[in-house]
Amino acid sequence: MTPVQFDVVRRIEAPVRGVWDVLVDWPGHADWIPATTVDPGEGDPAEVGYTFTAWTGYRPLVLEDRMRVTRCDFDDATGIGTCTVDKLGPVLGGTAGFTVRPDGDVTVLEWHEDVTVPHLPRVLAPVAGRLGAIGFKLALRKLGSVVAATSSPPTP
Image (tube, rainbow, N blue to C red; front, top):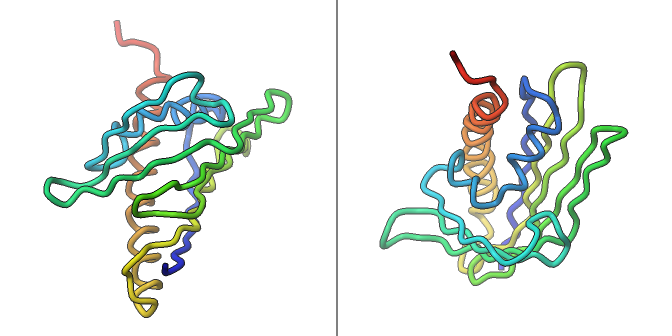
């Protein structure tokens, strides 16, 4: 198992609660993570123990990514939210998560991946981390437009 890690920080021009709500809508990740579908689990998606599965890619090359929420809390008083999931395989192990916090009128989103990948040569871990970060930077740019669309009042 080869460890792959990366962190991505993105400033999103939207209220922190709106960003949080889009992030914890697991099936909604398909709206902003390319080539991804999410099979939701049963229950409250922000509850510890909630499990779901994401598939990313195009057939026949699809990555199955099963996850379980291990922490998911949003403090209305401070506007800070943190969510962590365990990666349950069959391909990725480890953890991933995000934190949101207000900074004036924008939201600062910090995304972290600390995963293990079987059959990946260790020498390729830095490349995989860099590619993962690039992919998430692009996805988080799209997330910003999804949040803006969901929080904008309808046009008359």
